Length: 125
Image (cartoon, rainbow, N blue to C red; front, side, top):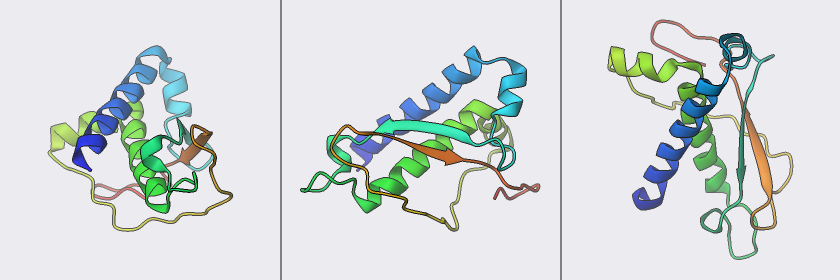
């Protein structure tokens, strides 16, 4: 798992940082995921490691991609630099998933909308 997951996390962070670098400050603030009206859009394709023997996106792969979307969001909106400065890390205490439809066949595009609905000194929802 770590052999495939770690490079994907690094790629998500790099993608978020590249998007941040190419965006204007106004676009970052508007698309940073601060509030439900400004979701961060993570786009990916269902890869060979994400599907079951029928070619459907595996249920566990949805959660893996949700984590990759969170990493990309934090790199894009600048939260990651604050995490490193304050020496804090993620701890996902709950997830709410709504499966709208299956993702198939292999290599089909899909997107995950992520947003920060609220935050405090120690928590992000």
